[in-house]
Image: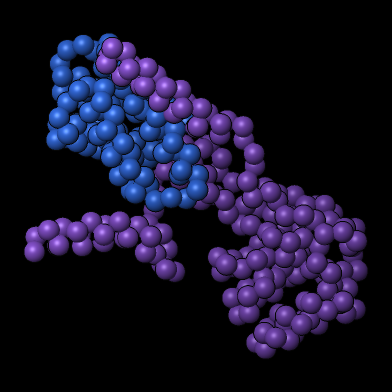
Length: 102
Length: 183
């Protein structure tokens, strides 16, 4: 249940960031957000079980998402990196904030 | 010059998460520690015995007598491997509780006077921050003839396969999308 909650939450947050960035094709954006986060989010939670540092894992997720965003959205590397950074920072900070209240 | 500073900076950033030595880990926002209450449920069956909880690191995990209600409490150094021993009241030497000669203490618990009845007790457990669990209660039914096995450290949860299946399916879909695009 926790995994699914974290997964859905990350998809929604990153979709919001993608929507702010592109301001069109919202349905396609949610599809891409589902795909990207279905690769990175479960793997992050899986590796967390082994006690790997969360900051290091977030850095890895950021790197993998640059690659996925570049491929799926067909953007330049620099733009992909900025988008990945914004999306991951938002989901990380909102996740921490919610974790303290739930 | 700038390039070498950048490389050193990246190497330092990569190493820093692993440099912890014996320093307590910084708070991990995704997990929390909850206490484990250990309890011996059938202590009344052994009125002629004293039960002592003891770790195996000299000076770090001093022996303590377990309360008559069977609750095993105490704070021990994190690397102590905590066990519970049964000692006949007639053989029990209370000076062992305050003895600073650690080799003597170790020898005493390794002797035939002390019977190990529970091994590898844990006093805390790490769970997800969103877990509703606030404590774990482990109840042990001991026997002087057999050692109670340690609680399983990892409970097999088959949902763990979801963590791997979901990314594999997503990667396949991405590959299909990209290959269709190229056509």
